[in-house]
Length: 142
Image (cartoon, rainbow, N blue to C red; front, side, top):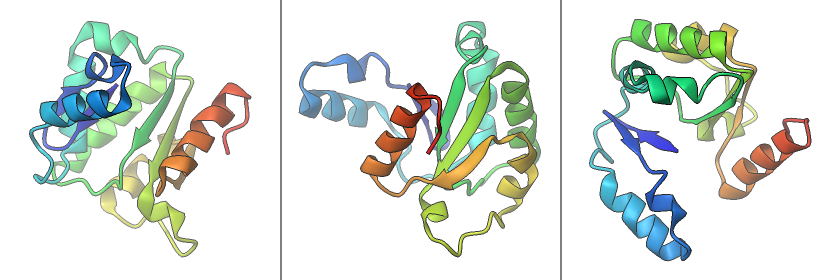
């Protein structure tokens, strides 16, 4: 599992802790870019630049939790999402903004990557995100 803000941070090891509080505290300590905005394209490019990480995408359901507000060059995001889409089974993008019934993907970044997304839907609550992920195991993305 990875997070991204202005850079990519791997959280997998931290989240393996038995106690939830310990896992969250350790993961929070690893993330150094809480308030820098998101450079989604740069972070996904960094992920794909590591062959071992890029191999995780092959045949996978890729779930991105992001508002899609790209602060960097949108073309980097488009290139990264296109590369992921060519390898992955599907890409689901969950945005807290998409939980609003009036939501329309109007940011330049979301408009540009929309053709590669299997699903763009709400991700405003932990419960909603969990429902979506569990639905994938049942073969029916909620």
